Each structure stands twice: as C-alpha cells, then as structure tokens.
Image (cartoon, rainbow, N blue to C red; front, side, top):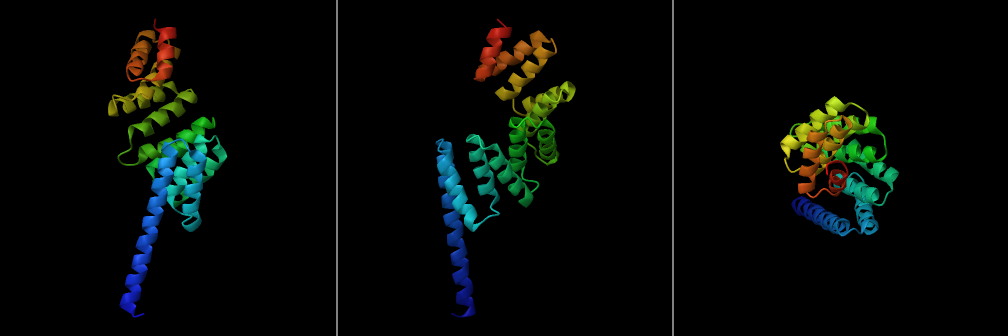
Amino acid sequence: MNHKFKASYWFLVLALLGACSQGSSNEGDALFEAGKYEQAVSVYSSILENDPKNIRALYHRGRAYEELGQLEAAESDFKSAYGEDQKNTQVLLGLSNLYQKMQQHEMSLQYANYAVELSGAPPTAYFLRGRAYHQLGNTGNALKDYDVAIDMNPDYGQAFYYRGMLKLNLKRNAAACADLKKAVALDHEQAREASATYCE
C-alpha cells in the first residue's frame, strides 16, 4: 500500500467511523425523544466505548440518566463532558439544572454563572441563575435575572411563573398575578394552578 493510498484509506475509515457515530447518536436522540431513556443510554454508551471523550454522547447520556432519576450518573457524565470542554453552554446549563434538582443551589449558581459569562449566553442561563438566587434567598438578583430571561425571550413561560411566585412571596400581588396569567397564556400548567389559587 503506497503512502498516498494509505492516507486516503485511513481518511475513508475515519469518515465512515464518524458517520456511524453520528448515525448512532441520531438513534439515541430519537429514543430519548420517544421517552425510551434506558435504550437511549445503551446507544450513547456504545458510542462512548469507542470514543470516551465524545462530549455530545456524554451530555445526552447524562440527560437520559437524569430523566431516569439516576442523578449521580447524570452528574458523572456532565462532569466528564465539562472536563473536555469548560465553555460548552449546553453542558454548563445541564449541570446547573441538575444541581437545582439535587438541591445543591450554590453549585447550581456556580455553573449558571459560568454560562452567563460566555458570549451569547441564552435566556436559559439567566433563568437558571435566577432560580439559584431565588432558592438561596437572594430575591433582588433573582428578579433581575428573571427580567433578563423574559426580555430575551418574551414567551418564556417558566420565567414568568417563577417571577410571579417570587413576587407573591414579596407581597407584590398585582404584579405577581400579571406574571402568572402571562405564564398561563403560555400554557404553563403550574401557573394555571397558582393563578386559580391566588389570583381569582
């Protein structure tokens, strides 16, 4: 095998392996979207056997573990992905959201802060930081971040809901009910219940 042919051969092999990995990843994504989380974990695990540093597979397997309630396994995958790329917004937000679920609000705040500091941070970064501040009792910063998230995405039902609930706690009932009714209009189910309880 001459050098030129050998180089072309390995390029083809690598391209085919990449295509197979992408195909498997798409299969895992389809299973995840269908709610078949255990099967999705299996597909992402097979990708990671051959490519243990695949950030996309680590993140998505972590999400599948999260949906299965296996939060420590999800944390392990998210942290592995973070170790490969500390400026991956998706991974940072995954960690922040996971630590919210784990009631580790300081950790949630830390990763949300990292995400907010990145150029082009999405509304979710501000929302999650607002949630962390909210849980930690920092109402001023929580309101500011909910405001930013809503300014960036005026259809952010969750942000309207949590801002409304925070305003209720602050006895700002008229403003709270305005937020809750907006969240209801955006089909947020918890807001529907809260609005019926506090605003009718």
